[in-house]
Image 1 (cartoon, helix red, strand yellow):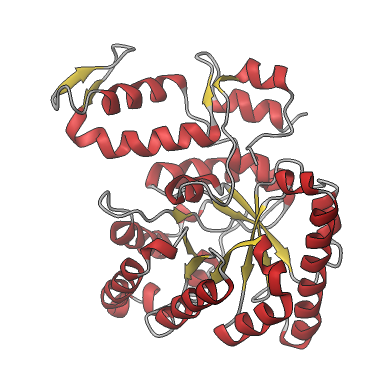
Image 2 (image 1 turned 30 degrees about the vertical axis):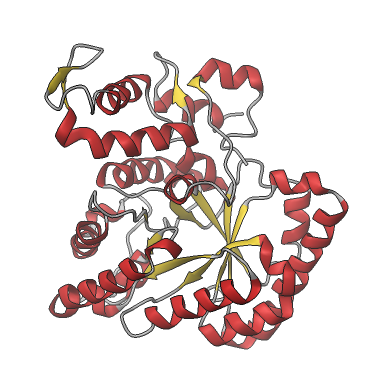
Length: 365
C-alpha cells in the first residue's frame, strides 16, 4: 500500500523530491498510525464493498472503517452484521484466488458497538477476520475502555491475530468541563497500560457538538466552535506529549460537496498544525484533499534531517539550511522525528512545489 498510488511514475517525479514509501499492517506502529491519513467510513449495509476493493474503485484510499455503529439503525443491525461477514468472506476468497489483490487492499478496520458483538462476529468470520487491521471502539470512556482492550487482547491470543484497538473519545464525560480532567486522567492510565495495542486515538466532534445542540455550517472549521476546540485541546494536551507514542486522528468533516472543499483543506491544515494526524472521511471526495496536506515540504524535511542528524553531535542551535530560521536540537528533536516519519510515508515535495500546487493538480486529474 502506498499513498497517491493513482499517480503515474512521471507525476510522482514531477512533484516529489522523495516519493512516498510503501506500508502495510506490519509497519512500525508509530509510522502506521501516521499513515492512515484519510480513513473512509464504509457503512456495514453497503452490499458491494468487497467488489469495490477488488476493482480498486477507491483509487487513492489506503484505510477504511467498516461501521456497525452510528451509521446503522438498530432495526438494520442484524442485516448489516450478516452483510459484513459475507463481504469479508468474499474478499478473503478473492485474495486467496488472486494474492496480488492484497497489495492494493486498504487497511480495514471494524467499528463495533460492544465486546459481545466483536466476539460474535469473530466466531462467524473465523480466519477472514485476519483481513482486519484493527477494531474501532466508539464512545470509549473509563467505564468500558478496559473491557474493550481486554477483549481485544484475548482475541489476539486466541486467534493469533495482531489486531489494533482504535478508541474514539466522544462522550459527555470528556466534553463536560466538571468531569473532563478526571475522565482524561482515568483514560490516560488505561491507554498507557494498553499502549502497545493502540494504533490511533480518534475524537468525535460530532457527538461532542450534539451535546450542546451545535452543528457547524459548511463554511466554518471545527476550530471555530470554541466549546469543542477547548475539549480537543485538552485531549491533545493529555495524549500528544512527546514521551508517549499515541497518534490522535482529527475529527470528521460532515460536508462533501465542492463548495466545502476549501474549508476541509483549511481544517486539515489546522489539524496537522495542532498535532492531529489523519482524518475520518465520510465520502470518497474527501480522500485526496485530506491526504494532500501530509507530504512534507523540502525545506521542512531538510530542517528535520538536520536536527535529527545532529542529536549526537551538538545539542545547541543550528542555522537552517535555508538560512531563514534557527533549528534547536533539544527542543525541536521530537518534532523532527515525527516529521521524518511523515515524510517517509507521504513523501517530500520538490523544492518549488507547494501543498496548494499538489492539491490543485490531484483534484483536477
